[in-house]
Image 1 (cartoon, chains in turn orange, brown):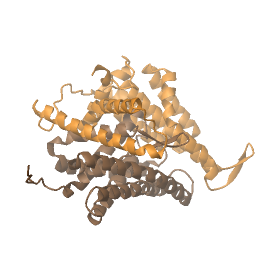
Image 2 (cartoon, rainbow over the protein chains, first blue to last red):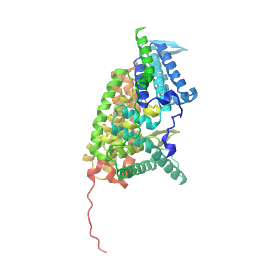
Image 3 (cartoon, each protein chain N blue to C red):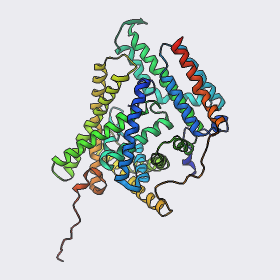
Image 4 (cartoon, rainbow over the protein chains, first blue to last red):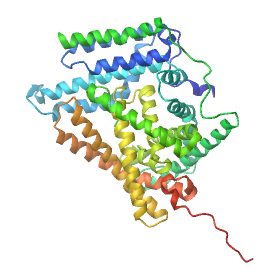
Length: 253
Length: 226
């Protein structure tokens, strides 16, 4: 089980950002992203300042830039969409390198790229400085319903188990000479998915019985309750507060 | 179709978040009725299943492949309330942990991918199961149609949200045509896979298909002459 407890995005460390209680970090990231989203897109410099803010947090958390940039690749599908925008959007057109592009489309593409990238970067920073269990604890402290947190924790706890089960089924198919080439082979894959569902569900039943036999009555005991001090809250609030300042400047300048 | 941050403006994102929160709250109560105190482990494992099955690639042709979205499948296999919960939890974890889908767009993502897909799929499925002949064929065809319609329905819901709070200047008609067009294609794949998967489950454990549980016949004792 040892390997399953830290997720792939997490980077172990002892920086001040790592040490912050998870609920403070979650709230800070959420407020930051909300502020970024409400910034007018014409304030181009504001997004640069946001990027600087995030880079500062990354530096304090000692998350290397290369690591952060590699994680940003998850955004690539939206980049493709953003690149299309100037070609399909309405409104007045402008000439760039001999191509006729929509001005509104260019602004729209910039808007999505800038805000989307900042959002992804903030989430990646959160995930790389916060352990899974802590994240769930933080969500619970932020008044997310306990049942929802429990479901999420079971999903994370057994996610690797189920994925591994699927990998074993793939190995079993491959070792019998199966190779999926097209829709003709979907039947076999769908049967695997069906079997995987039955195995997952039955595992759920066994897990539940094991829990009941250990005294589970609908709620999990909280062993390490993390409370946040006023100082920690204000330390975490620096990021969204600075972002809010930038946002207000963006609206009024 | 995970919507990133900045695609939908802040007020509409917050409103969609409120809708999603309300729907999740209703589902939490409903799931307790569907699963009683087994809710947490079972819904958790089903979420893990959906998460895993989204990684199962179905090759289409010439190197392209698709994967299951799982909303309709979850609705049919575990019921609408648990289905909404499971897909929402998957989206939450993908947003918080894998940065897939923006945090402020979480409400938008849950509204169109968890709520609309599951509700549309389940309503259609139940209606069709009542109409179609009993048995495995009827259930799989109902699953096929339910999954086929649920994906474009999510695209229509997304276009609606876009009409309210889209930040880009692409004409609504174009967004609608593109989204629905692409998602009809995706829906066909989703429908074939969902129907086959439901068929595979119903062949082995018919009692686990929530949407068809009233089709089960009670066990009967038969005399056998030796």
